[in-house]
Length: 450
Image 1 (cartoon, rainbow, N blue to C red):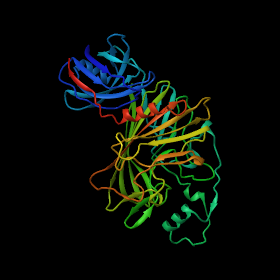
Image 2 (cartoon, rainbow, N blue to C red):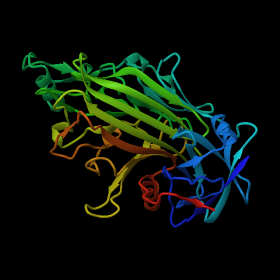
Image 3 (cartoon, helix red, strand yellow):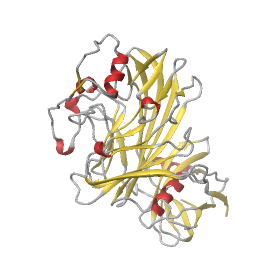
Image 4 (cartoon, rainbow, N blue to C red):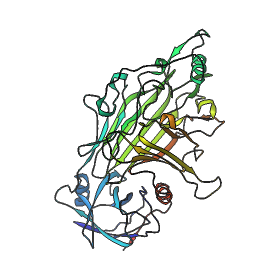
C-alpha cells in the first residue's frame, strides 16, 4: 500500500533540523515542497498532516510506515504523532540533508518494522525516566527527588562531598533574607544548598556515550544540577524564594507523566507543581522533552516548558535582576573547553541567538559538544547569554535584565529551546546560522495535489 509524495528540496545553504507542520489535501497523491538546506550528515525533523487509509494508519501504529525514495528506494522511517480527527493524522519523519532539486517519495507500509525504536520509559532501579537508543543512553530526566548518593557521575564514581564555609557574598545575603531568624554572624557551609532536587535533565550523553552534564558538584555550588529551569528570585505574597538554589520553593512531581517511543523520536511529558515551603502549590509546570534519532554527527533534542500561576502575584527574576536564571546548564569540565555564543544586533532580521559548549569529555577521545538554540517565540526574545567558564556554565537567561516576569493565572508562560548534541568542536558560523534558521523556519512545507 503506497501513497505518492513529491518532496521538492531547495538546498540554498547549510540548514539543519527543522520541525514544522503543513496541511495535506484529501488525496493519495501529495506534493510536499520542503525548503531544506543540509549538510550531507544532517537530518531535518518535519511534521505534516495527512489523511491515511486504514492500511497506512495500521502500518503507522505498528511502526511499519516509511517514506520510500522513488529514484533511490532509500527508506525513511515515519512516526505517527497525533490524531487530529477521524481521518487526518500528523506524522513526523527525519528527512536527510545534502540533497538538491526534486525528491520523490512514496508513503509505504512495510511488512515488518523497518527501523529500531528510540525508547522513553520509566526508570527501574533509579525510578527516574530515561531515553535510550539501541544500547546507548541518551538522557535521564530526574522526576523524583535525587539525593547526593544517587547522583550519576562519570564512570559510576561515588564521592564523599565536601562543602566550603562562607559568611558573606550573594548566596549568604540572599539566604539571610529568606531566614530572618538567623544571627547576623552566622557561618554557613555549602551544605545548605546540598538539598535533594528533582525536575531536571542529567545525565545528558554525547554521541559516543560521554557524559556531558554535571550534577551536585563537589566543593561549591551543590545546587547546580545538569540542565534545569529555575529562577533565583521567585516572589510570592511579598516574600522571596529561590527555586534555583533550592530555598523555600521546590518543584515536586504531580505523578502525571507520559512516554512516547518510536522510530523517529522518544518523548517524556511530565507535570510538576512548585511548592512554597513544600506546602502551598503556587505554579503548575509542564515539561516536554523530545529526543530524535541520532546520526553519526548530531542528535536533536527539543525542550518545551510551560508555567502557569496558581496564586496571584507570582514573579520570576534573575539574580538581582541582572545575572543568571532561566534555563541553566552546568556541564562537565572537559579538556580544551570552549564556550561561544552569538546574538544578532538588536533590530535585525532575522534575530538569531545560539551558544555552543564543547571540549574533550571524559570517555571520549575527540571533541564533542552541545549547541543551545533559543526559539524566537519566547517572550522577551532573545534572552541574554551568561557564561561562567570556571564553572563550565552557559545559559540563555529569562526574563529581561532589570525586570520581573509576572506569571498569569490563565495563560501559561511558554519557553522553547533546542539542543544539538554534536560531534566535533564549535560548528562554523554558517552551520550555526542554519541550525537556528531551521528551528525558527517560517518556510513551511506546502502540500498540493500532484
